Image (cartoon, rainbow over all chains, first blue to last red; front, side, top):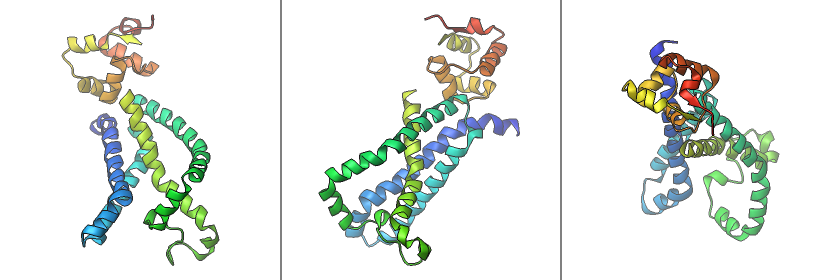
Amino acid sequence: MPNAIKKTRFQYYDTLVDVGFYLQLVGTLYGFLLRGIVARYTALETEITTIAVTVFYIGWLILLFTVAARFMRDEYAERLWRQTALNFTYLMIFLPPLLYIASMVFHPAISAYFAAGNEFFRAQPSPGQYPAQWNMYTGVVNVVMFAGLYAPLVFTTIYKFHRWRG
Amino acid sequence: MKNRLKVLRAERDWSQAELAVHLDVSRQAVNAIETGKHDPSLPLAFKLARLFDLSIEEIFDDQN
C-alpha cells in the first residue's frame, strides 16, 4: 500500500465514523420526530422523506464499513472498538428483557404511538416487500430488520462515547 | 502510564499530527499516549524508542 495512503487511513477513520454517524442520525431523527411535522405543514413530504431515507441508508452503509474496517484502525482505535464491542454485547443481552418490562409499564403510551402509524414500525409488510413465505414470521422479520438498521448506529454511539471519554 | 512524550515531541518542535505520521498511528492515539489514557503496544513502544533514540524506560515510567 502506498505510504501516503498507509499514513492517512488512520486519520480518516474517525472522520468516516463521524460522517456515517451524523448521516444516519439525521435520517433517524427525521423519521421519528420531523416527518409528521413536515407532512402537516408542507407539501414536500415525499421529496424530503426520500432525501432523508437516502441519507439514512448512506450513513448506515458507511457505519457498516467502519465497523468492519479493521485496516483503518490503529491500536488505540482498535482498543476503543473492542471496548465498544464488549459494551454492545452486554446491551444486546440485557436490552430485550428491559424493553419487555418497559413495554408492560408504558403499554398505553406505546399503543397510542403505534396507532398513529410509523413507517419504521409497520406491523405488516407491503405487498411484495418480503417473500410470501415470510408472512408468518412478520414480527421476527421486522425485529431483525429494525435491529440490522440501527445496530451500527448504536455501536457507533458507544464508540464515540469511549472516544470522547478518552 | 507516565511518559515524556510531550517533552520529547516539543524538543523537536513536532505537532501531535506530525508525530502520528512518524509512528503510523492517528493523532488521537498520540494524544491518548501523552495523556496516559493509553499504553502503547510493545511494537509501538519500540518504534517510539527508535524514533527518539532512547530506551523505552527513558520514555515511559511505570512507577505509580
